[in-house]
Length: 305
Image (cartoon, rainbow, N blue to C red; front, side, top):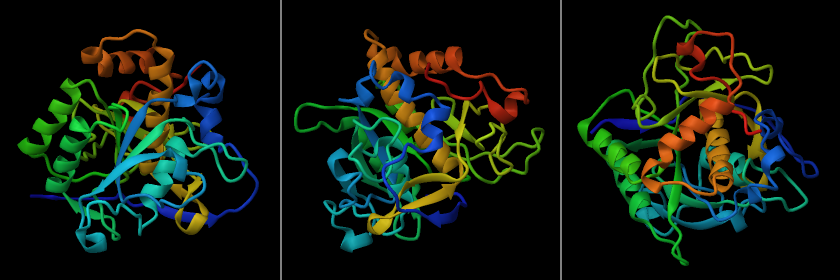
């Protein structure tokens, strides 16, 4: 089976300070709906990544469970500790808790299910990804919770029938699938770059913009791109209780996943089987339109007001 891996991203700087709301949270106008959306409370987001720093003070209370699908820590399923930092950064963007220090995520009261599919090098296999997707679809929490959102800030270059079948099953189960579009772009809207699973129509493929809402040069362009979100110089949680700024579509996708968690609490009545399409319609109707080709920005920049 083909391999999956993290896209290229860069560490910009470490950061320690009093509690702040990173700019991306306000760019998508998350704070404007926090009260009405209960900050994402009760929504479970599964993060398929390199694990999580389980003792990070901004994240400990957000973790509802997890499973290790890699060989890290001797392959012990119950140890989903992050030895890379990428998954911890993604988790903080989605659900870092408001605790008076550090950073706050887009949906700071959501619950995180940590499914470790990438090892300390950021590498994994499609088999591990498929197992984790199936696990997320069938998972039930201690109080009957179910996964509503899956975030995948990862990708591979190859389509396989097995992966697509699993993605389709998850979609049909009413779970919203958010995937990073990919970081191999060249800035040309007429040349298309493809990464899986983001290229599958059933996913919300998320590209990256900078803080001026200009598409990132590295962000993949293609006709299955759905929406854009902040992906440059993003401040979030990291290893050893630290905070770091990273850049990549890996950072854009969790902004969208956190936004989904909020929208789920804004939609009072919904049909579970139609939920993914309802979320896409919500984002389409609220998004900020951008003066760039569709292949470069999809349906626009995610907004929550």
